[in-house]
Image (spheres, rainbow, N blue to C red):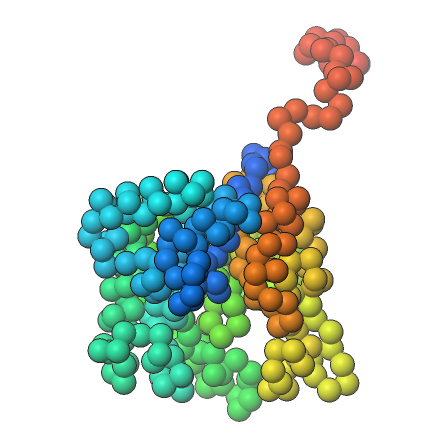
Length: 379
């Protein structure tokens, strides 16, 4: 939609006018929490990565103060039990607290992906689902929605206010407009995507938790424009939020700093991940079907890529983001443990302790209203 959230004028977000005019309104300043780490890329069958008590101690030893838990990994977390038992959730919190770390968010990236799957990806994504529903797209979708609902209850039991996930995709195979897309195809896909997610968003609202969608290629919500399309269709739902990850914007060549200016009110989770884009005469944005190491766009360990993290942390602090900064490690070159070891001090070094007073307060003259009027010639 040009000039605002939506091409449908009967639905507008309260701050639509300010956004459409490109104005930047600064909210209260806030300090980001961290460093934290997403455990998905590190969990494994060998110690210390095969159990929650061991992996949280490992994370704490590297200097992490928070962990983001993948709910699909039974080695670390039992989602069914967490949804039904606050006692279990208290035990999980206790394990983390004993190691000196907090739980930042639960993640349902794999289950969220399965809320909406185009048939072209049925077989490829079946592995994300429970064995009992594989090969049955309808049952798989129902299972994914149930997983999301369980994660809402688990988040409430854990006292969490943000949740990270993927939205899934129905229109992704039609990303490039050749052959020409039939009129209404994309609109129908987003209408259906919103229909599936609206009850889930309502459940998270009841749980007091935001649903933070990772803006990601492969998802129907993969940039600002598509987020707006979805947000408008879920009625600007107060729990529809963003898990901000600049690495995916580098690979798309999207201005990730301007993104914060536009969408900061909806950014309620933050994956700290680096990336680089080095196009050549052989490959560009699409990557030429090459392995990660040979693509123009590559994910890198923190500090090894091109992301301006000083700019990102400054803008997030400016707009009052006070959530967690969570390392998501993905790199085509570096060993994960080296990436983890370097990640905690990198994040800690970028977190801004927001000042509570202006730098020039020392020069304040203490002039009152009457003096101000005299200075303006209005006495």
